[in-house]
Image 1: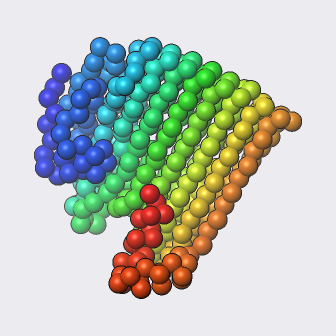
Image 2: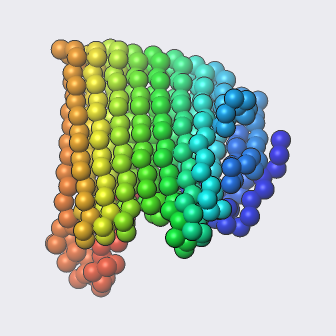
Image 3: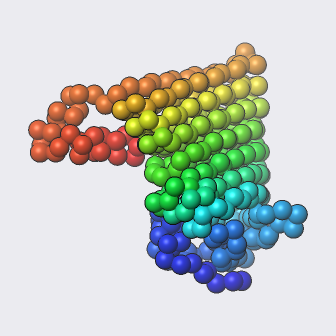
Length: 310
């Protein structure tokens, strides 16, 4: 397997999106500027390149426990535009951590874009914790664009926790998530998002609870600053006796704009579906309380935002 080959900018991006200060233990696939930068497999986790298009297949053997897969992508050249297709096959009763994400450092005049399409197939009783972080940096005039597509298919008794985070530097993103949840299976999504400047971010979710005992929970927390725009569009469909919940809690600042579109569709008399949505500014009494402790107004705002997005 090729050893990891990254320059200092790429290593900084890896630290930002995957909290990696060294090469991880376990399975990994590093991608840099549209090329393979390093790969490792284990006895229980295999990673192979697709033959018909750009991307990889990750196969986790049944019963695998306490193992991880890291698949970060970094772009440090301007003008790159790529779409990558990654499929994850999680065996029965396996329990794994998958860390993905993309970082773009664009110091040029052309746009750099990464579109990642991830499909998860969880067999009976499998569990996945999936962490995806997006980050942008660089002082060029070219945009940093990220459009992730996530699909999840959960068989009986499977469960998946998705942690989706984008806090800084991404100019434009359309985040699409589709899931089909089977009998007694559970999907939990936690989204954390902040936009600033003239950035735009659109998040769409379509969660289908298809069998008895299916459970879906989508919670988004976001902050829109400066002239940025956000749209949160989440729909949960109950096709059987099930439980679904969607929530959007947002802070609006400056000239930011936020549109929340929660949607519920019940096609079974025993489908229990709920939604919550709240958009508001930072409360004045919170600012005053922190400022009495010696913080400036800007410092107090940052403390409140950091706590809100935690």
